[in-house]
Amino acid sequence: MKEVCIIGGGASALMCACFVKNNVNITIYEKTSKLGKKIIVSGNGRCNLTNINMNKYSYSCNINNHMQRFTNEQTIDFFNSIGLETYADNEGRVYPITNSSQSVVDVLNNYIKQKNNIKFVQNTEIIDVFNEKSQYFVKLSDSSIKKYDAVVFASGNQTNLKLLDKFNVEYNNFLPSLCALHTDTNKNLSGIRVFNVGVSCSINNDKFYEEGEVLFKEDAISGIVIFNLSAFMSRKKSFANDIYVDFLPKMNKQDLIDELSKRVVNLSKLKVKDFFTGLFVGAISEQILSKAHLNYNLSVSTINNKQIECIVDIIKNYHIKTFSPCDNNQVCSGGVKLSFLDDNLQSTNNNGLYFMGEVVDVDGVCGGYNLQWAWTSGRIVGESL
Ligand SMILES: Cc1cc2nc3c(=O)[nH]c(=O)nc-3n(C[C@H](O)[C@H](O)[C@H](O)COP(=O)(O)OP(=O)(O)OC[C@H]3O[C@@H](n4cnc5c(N)ncnc54)[C@H](O)[C@@H]3O)c2cc1C
Image 1 (cartoon, rainbow, N blue to C red):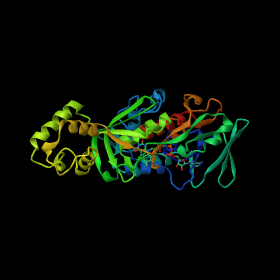
Image 2: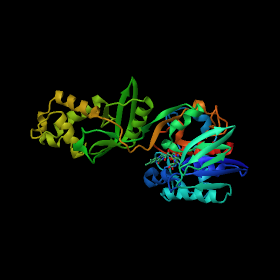
Image 3: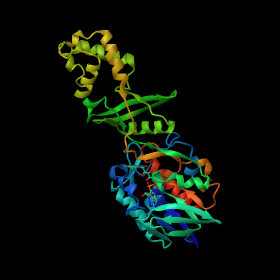
Image 4: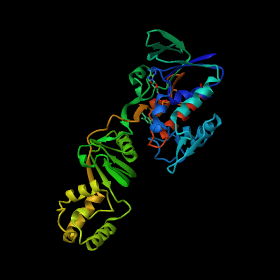
């Protein structure tokens, strides 16, 4: 029997175990006491396990060939076949019908339990890996050394990439992705959530623009659009300090000028502080009026065309200064370069050394794409071991 060591008991390792052939013995080492920890916390405890919509912007690089070997549809079918009922929301995000991520871990564990070639060793960290004469040796946290025919890294973004230097496997260092961004310029908006706004920034002439929901916090901005913006920054290996929010992206500048001019006439008997009532929530209105240096207590009728243009500029290009990524990142960009792996995710320089999941330099945007990569890469390695 072929003996294989898998480092890490997360999403990709569990999927790999489901697809490994019976003539291969697998030992999965997990340094914590829990298997599938990140699956449990994913999707706010609901586990957004994949997405029914895939496009070329879903991932940091082209992984079409890999994805065709275990597509999102096949993933859903597989989970259904092992007992997990699923549904998709309006954005195509797929969740278990129980809305509990524990169900995802449970169905995987139940399926794996029926196989007798998979062993789990928890509370054990792999601290080193080396090879000699086509055998692999792994050093465990208790300093014991075990011998294997193949080793699979499934250790996610906690992988000590330096361990790979001896194997001539090239990698990019991990950088936080899918996270909130620190800012201290919006304290007055803390707790406000805005929907259907446009967020933009540019890095070295490459532009990011996406519409969706943004959440203002005491010292940060968050929300799916901001998470995806952090992924853009991480892929560019650069941080953009200046980002812009368009509070009314469906209206062009001229439409907005016309709309506000009408409001000046229709609301002429009200005070400036009421100018935006019904258009924005209070805290946003106050912020825009204060940025436009308007006196709240004057009559709306005093607002002139120049001031309207200034207000429009603020609404369409609301400037936010950001400082750094927050450390609540869901994933990291970086990891082992795909160009150093063959079609089965085996190192081109080292027979028997495999990589799957987040340790590979593939990352997706929000919406179930990162787990889909863990499932797809896990299956590919499982079948090819
Ligand atoms: C809060 C949060 C929410 C998320 N929500 C979603 C979501 O809704 N949808 C989505 O698609 N993605 C989501 N993700 C991302 C997704 O969870 C990861 O992309 C995915 O789990 C990666 O799978 P993996 O198998 O590569 O690694 P992981 O699932 O991270 O597993 C790696 C495991 O290896 C173990 N390990 C590391 N080093 C060693 C070692 N040396 N020895 C032994 N064990 C080791 C770790 O303890 C860990 O358990 C979320 C992530 C977070 C943090």
